[in-house]
Length: 88
Image (tube, rainbow, N blue to C red):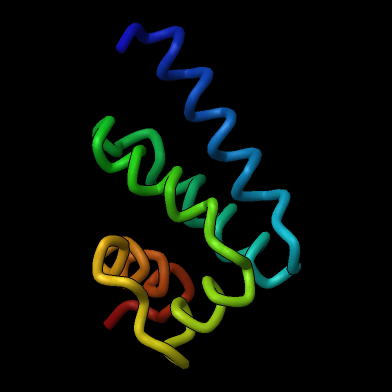
């Protein structure tokens, strides 16, 4: 992927992370995107893009550990959920 196309994709994914249906997911995903998107591989960006298509209420329950996420995005959800956890 060319650098220009990648940069455009990163901006699009970051914007989608900030403009969610519920404020909690705006905060969680925009913080995660700001810290991690630039370092992700194209395959990881594909997974992140697919995750952004999920319903916000479902995402919130998965990220907060109220429900188990689907296996296809479980590792990413776990990583996102650590965004606001204090480091040990």
